[in-house]
Image (tube, rainbow, N blue to C red; front, top):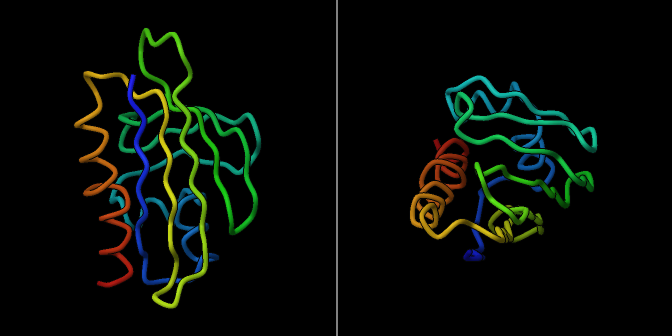
Length: 126
């Protein structure tokens, strides 16, 4: 199991970034794929046609998202914590993803950088 932590700059306000990460219609705009998402604690979510699935654990409006991401056969919970901070360039996103299976680590890092926060930054820069 491995952990991953990184900061990203998104050229938009924390309120807009939070909405982009929690509203299924907004998620579809920047991913190009339908999404199932709710800010209800304990609700299940699905993105990229089921490539990412899990459970929503905690929300702090415009500031924080905590989710459990499911990996088949994994004994320990894989927890994603996203914190949003105001920055002169928009929003500084603090990502922490714990307990990533070793065999999935490189794909997860690439996914975070390219498909998730890379795509979100491109969407707002577009």
